[in-house]
Image (cartoon, rainbow over all chains, first blue to last red; front, top):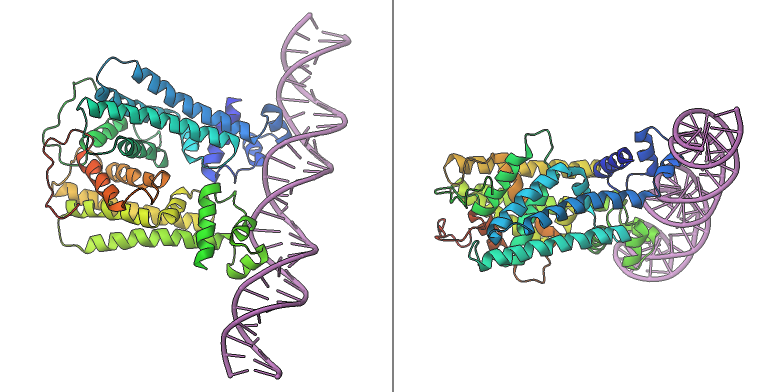
Length: 195
Length: 195
DNA sequence: TGAATTACCGACCGATGGGTTGGTAAAACA
DNA sequence: TGTTTTACCAACCCATCGGTCGGTAATTCA
């Protein structure tokens, strides 16, 4: 069953959801279409399961971060870092989630969950701004969107083979918080490994 | 003809390229499918034209930036800023370009041009690193990808109504180069309006 | 061993989609 | 005015797709 989902998601990502037929999925698994329908209720269910895999990972990380007792700024750093790790770990599922744009029930659900996650990030950015941890001359909503725009763009090029995701996560955090400019005097934000 | 392309691209973006039928496009224009085929050779041509609109804008900006006689760092800032402006100006075309992932001839062409643009950015990042203008502890290719990952994410939420694109472009440049951290002493990189 | 469950398949169905054909009405041009 | 070009359309073609149906082989379980 997991094999079915994995194969489907891989095909969805390489050829596009619409362009992938249930026949394609079945063929990849070495079974016929009828047999495939014996295992899954339909194409949309495959999409729904994939979206859930991605969304669950993201919200789990948001939940963990929320429960940590530290500054909002540090929690924001943790959220970014952990999100990169989730993206790397569930790459194919998150890729599919981020490409959803249509109008079916499942797709609308996916978009709603993404907006929900966005709201969490925006709130955290606002908190961090309020405590003076990050710049206030950029609208919180805009900052949150650009920040996760950068994070999410990973799905376009990151491939698991290319080294540990932790290294990448650190890079993303550093770039997001300190920018591209020469790191004259990198301010160590508390020294808690990586954040 | 421009009206045909505009209508098609809008539909492609809202419902997805595959999910949009030529009948849908025709209906939106208030003509029949046969008449639509009298104006365009096929669905792929519409995609090709849209992709060209986006790609041409991006490469034009890269060309202009390349011809400016200043530091690589400042040119990189200009490229980011101008890219945001192109994205805002040709939003629907660039949106479509960035969503292309399939395997047809046109889609492969689009991906190739995107990679080409990527190479230009990476090269500029390397130059800027070499002259000491930006941090060197991040791989140039990775930095370039994350940088334009952020820029490109605009297509997911930016809507023209929301104020001048110049303001947004400045925000993106600031965030990309100085990061989210509190702007203790914003280093004015030369004072050339916005960069 | 016999019954029930599970995995599997070939053939089929209705709908949709990209694209074509063969033609008419209206401009543009001479 | 006659002719060519342009804009337009209804009907049709064929491939593909999501999904169903009726049935068979293998497996599980009692």
